[in-house]
Image (cartoon, rainbow, N blue to C red):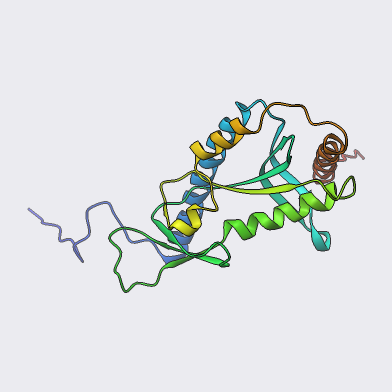
Length: 211
């Protein structure tokens, strides 16, 4: 009888991932979690009865584009929604460029993970939206909403500037259902036109030729 020895105390069938493989896995997992968060927020917005657009790509500065998770329209203005699905504990100040993330069980001396502020990220989205609506009326308001759809525990400062799913529902319920008219309706129409124009440019026609 031959006995197999296990090296390094690893469990059978498990192997250590390389740094590159870990990076790929983390990116894949983050994408899945992000999709779950966006779907949850989309469901809440769709039930609101307000005009909503999901997954919007608009022109930005320097011939670039910016991708926005959700937009919705109310009588008070245009609302820009960024969805995040994080775990662990998030700390920082709303004006910080980076937030700090820690998970339970981590070494207290281990450096925290740094996450680019969703508030700052969505502020860029808001600028792209306002660049369009100000052409109709500079007085139109554009609101920055960051929805935390995951299990993360936020420090009081960050929690005060973000929304949970239930807080988003409360906000939507407080906005009323009056159909926006005049400049606000025209600004929304411009956003839809810009979105469709961008999609049309992104679709390249396939031309086949026979000899």
